[in-house]
Image 1 (cartoon, chains in turn purple, orange, red, brown):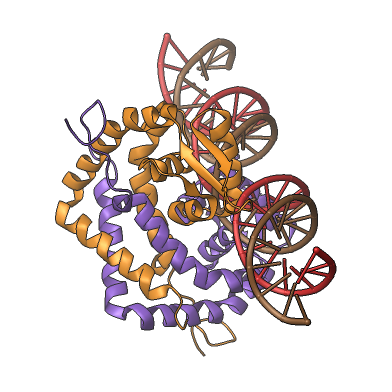
Image 2: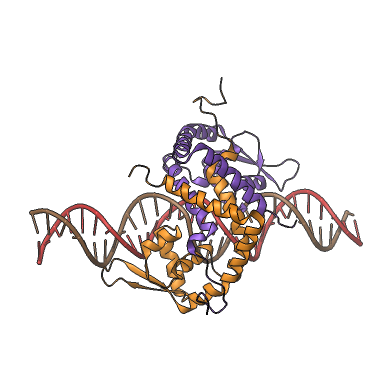
Length: 154
Length: 154
DNA sequence: GCCAAACTATTAACATGTTAAGTAATATTG
DNA sequence: CAATATTACTTAACATGTTAATAGTTTGGC
């Protein structure tokens, strides 16, 4: 009668799952970065937070969460850990005691600058394997996709 | 002297992080699918496992992990949960007692077929927002990237 | 057949993802 | 200005990500 179910909606081929395709590609990329993350004793998410703070200014927790693509409960635990290890500092915002301002410490900055060369080396290897132009085009496509799916009606 | 650190390696702009770009795009996509996953009481990963088993045959745990982009410790816990709720069954492989064969149950198949229409509706919305051809091209690019980074020298 | 090496799955421990609930501070309304 | 709603962050609970260690099987020499 149809493709095998009562509702008449054929099951999409598993290879055409967009979340899976994005995840597979991301895992292939992360496999290149995990060794040095491990060597420097930081998780992927801890690195993202330090990375977002590198510019030097204080950043509010909520803003930091959006920048790093983290949910605030996760970020809360990550900041607790980073503060305990002396890589970041937190203080309440003077103008609004609800908000928390986060900044990287000199130790955190030193860690960032020690790992940066290893990270850049992997970027060069990835660009060599896939093509610098194709990588640039992919950044654009991914940003367009993100924008196309944001707030469809608001 | 240079871009701000002693090693002379300028820090890459945070917007040019490939893992972040892939993650942001994936999160934008997943935001469309999470509501129905939640309505049907399954996690994203549980859905991936059921989805991979839909064809009907028995699949080894290791193969299933690769198909679903899951590490075997995660899959082990997920299968325990899915088996407890009656959505999959496990049995040792007759020819090799080390291996475990997994299959979806009628209840699991029923869940798959109930949610499929909601999932397909979101795929249509995504294709409408971003363009069917661009989505197809993205699948290709992501697969090429994955292949380009797999086993560079083996 | 026996023993060491390799393989498969699981468990353990710690960190994060996800949703709901809680706490404190600020903004709003009457 | 007091009661209420809203906001920002945290905590709690359960599920998964990640790495290391463990237990049971099989395989390969010998």
